[in-house]
Image 1 (cartoon, helix red, strand yellow):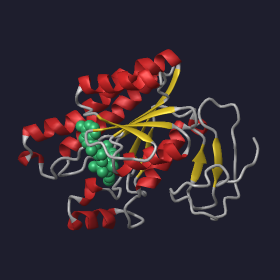
Image 2 (spheres, rainbow, N blue to C red; image 1 turned 90 degrees about the horizontal axis):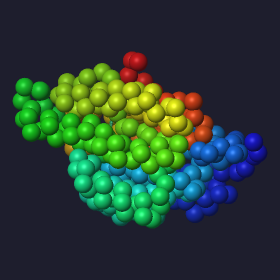
Image 3 (cartoon, rainbow, N blue to C red; image 1 turned 90 degrees about the vertical axis):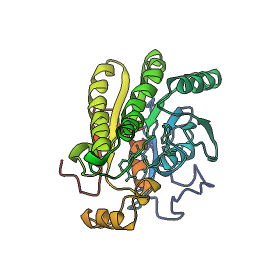
Image 4 (tube, rainbow, N blue to C red; image 1 turned 180 degrees about the horizontal axis):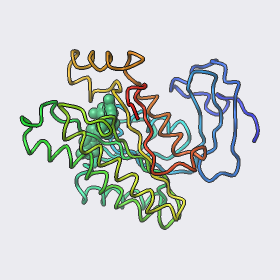
Length: 285
Ligand SMILES: NC(=O)c1ccc[n+]([C@@H]2O[C@H](COP(=O)([O-])OP(=O)(O)OC[C@H]3O[C@@H](n4cnc5c(N)ncnc54)[C@H](O)[C@@H]3O)[C@@H](O)[C@H]2O)c1
């Protein structure tokens, strides 16, 4: 271990690392295959990692949580590929139009990627679709099919196609985006809750299947995070979510991204098959 100062490594980063915010604690885990921690600031929550030389796929990375995850990986030196049904320009990432429910689109994107960088070190299964906020009895079957396809079957398919690359390398990190809904079941979101519970169970099962190699599979389960996904439910619903939140606020995309990067780093190498709460204390277990 040796000391270093935050900011030395990424002087031009415009991601809010709070310049001059007193990064006086720092750790570097040398020799670890997966991303040493470069520095950790006082109480700002900003941690910098070194993911240089690693290739990351972030599904649904055009906006919201996925965008913050992709941005933090770029800041940490990784080669980042964003797969999204609506690709958007994002500095220093490669963006591809991929619908995670379409196996042929995933295969094409993978072939293109592998022709340029044969390794995939990290997969963040983040693409998500909340669907209609309605009682189950009023939910159109086509709608719940779509919710399951994007949030659950999309995770299966992307993972199914990328896992052999990690298997060949003997290592990899997979982070699946679940939800508080998948742990507690939220009224008005029955199909989304079921899909998310499926992601949680899939994470636990897969982690145990692949842990003979250095492949770790974990799940992050956010409560309400301030993105388009919940904003489109309207101010009334968002206010209710804030009221139900012990700290009386929504989470931020940067807070979720920070946890995702930590899960892909050397610091969490002993964690697998686990579900990490990001609900501001709202989840009871
Ligand atoms: N925001 C929250 O409160 C919250 C809470 C719990 C879990 N989550 C989960 O976090 C993840 C990200 O959520 P967000 O709030 O950033 O959502 P968002 O709606 O802001 O972004 C979702 C992204 O996924 C992409 N996407 C949707 N369908 C896709 C498909 N079929 N193929 C590829 N890309 C697709 C969208 O284009 C978008 O870029 C989702 O899995 C969501 O379920 C969010």
